[in-house]
Length: 499
Image (cartoon, rainbow, N blue to C red; front, side):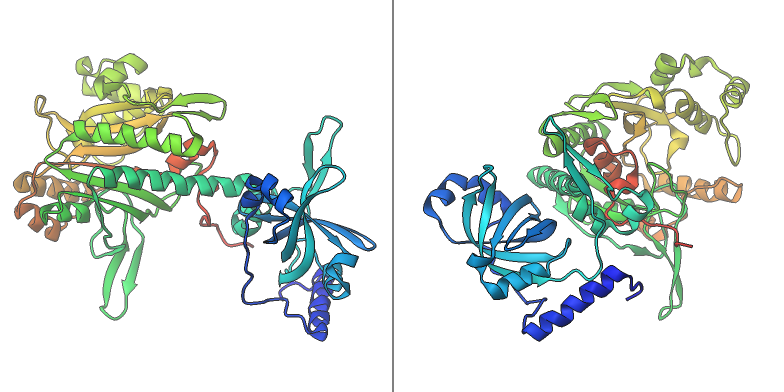
């Protein structure tokens, strides 16, 4: 053991005593017949029939007085009181009861009863130690005030420790565990929607010889056997488009993506993304899919399309309003970029505290102005469509205005929620744009796409008209579960080493 404090030593001494008693404190299995949810749902029937039940969970409250012990066991669905009387469980089992500590896993066989105070409880007939916790958990203190409200003191609240020891965080804080249960429901609802719409779920490489699909800085590694440099995936886009070329027509992937960039409240170097692509569709079709997915996800998480995020009600019910980027800048920022010269743009961006790396490009300047003036005002779900052509090299030109591309970004709570295109399928134009990205990268622009000859081979083989969407799952879960930081929705977030 790394730490041998008095509590750890006392628990290790109990393990020795268990062995002397011939009791295995770590049995292979326990035949549980009911969860706490089952027991609550079947209350009337179980009280009347006195049916034998077997229940198990972690000890989260323990109070022993002489020959009688009351404890609460918690499983995935909640907590339930256990009543242990020495004259019922017997001398041997009551010796086990005497050695139970907060945090142990215990199994109990018995029947259901109501105590004199009316608390629905298990009347224990047999007690089984299932896992002796050698390392003590922090013990929160609960007090019920005169109005019946529960107050908890000494909670496990240190943020850094909570993230490093998420297992304890979930064991003690039900609301933390509930976030990840809701996350699972949201992912299931999204998967069901896409499968209903005849999308096929696929898996693409995490280790890639050439990264691509997003303007991002990659993590780099080395494959010793092949003696080659590899990159952790920044996005699955280029591989999913290869699937469309291969005739799969509708594909999606939940992927772990990695970007070697900063960490803040809404960014993590490792995050979960969803991307899906549909042949013979465009960005208008993708907008419908996107708003439908978010609406269904909100219902899965909260039971409603309306969620409360940090005191603000946000309604994800479809359809969402749509603004072109130019119109949004004029409506929310007060600038008409169609009448502004390059010098005007430079002056406004400088005045607002913005900056641009690499060479001056008007389209990138308009995007910077949008980020400075509009983003934070988009609280209710909104689509921003028709971006400057410099936004990305992977999108098809706008069918009316060649200075724009058919791209949309959805926003809510002032956050960008995703990105989508009418995908570029002209191989000649695609090559030109990727070559331009390489040139811009050499010119000092921080995040550009590398050249991917194999991807270009795929597009040259024939990519049908296609619509595609990509978005971050973690930011979605933050919104739908009212969490302030991305680390609160990632089970085991990356942490700097402890010093």
